[in-house]
Amino acid sequence: MLRDWRDTSLYLSLDTSGLWDLYCIIRVSVVYRGRAVPVGWRVIRHNSYSVKLGVYRDLLKRVAGLLPSGVKVVLLADRGFLDVDLMRYVRAELPWQYRIRVKGNFWFWQPEYGWRQIKQCHLGAGEALLLHQVRLNKTQSLDKVHLWFL
Image (tube, rainbow, N blue to C red; front, side):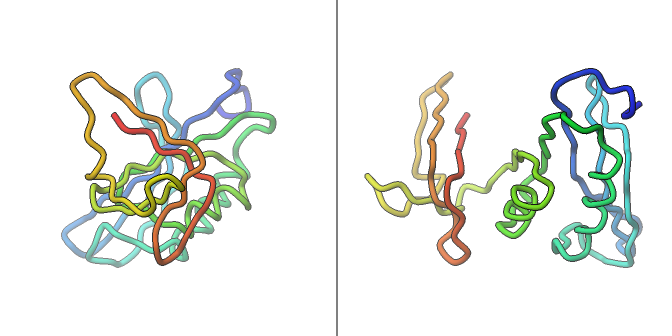
């Protein structure tokens, strides 16, 4: 399927699920026609859905080797994967784009406002906001990130 990929973009979903509070399955899937088709996974003995980048970094690298060249890759992940180290790794080493959901208490910095939390940005019904070139996270800062509010 991936060898004959014809689109200019490819979306990957990074997700975890658990079994009996003993195991965690870390899965990378290609999003295709509204479905997530697994292309790589790792099962670890772990009683939580949250895992650190060091546990699944090799999985991402292995999946990257399966992908066709010349395709824009976008990694989709839920807020459990909100990790500045992951963002840096995806950007620099793979190099992919990413779309990661953030929590309301997550901090970002803008020159005109300083440090703010996501929950401090209020939108009206049907409004969206895109902020360019912001800095994320007070403790492990990451620059030149775009935030999209819906």
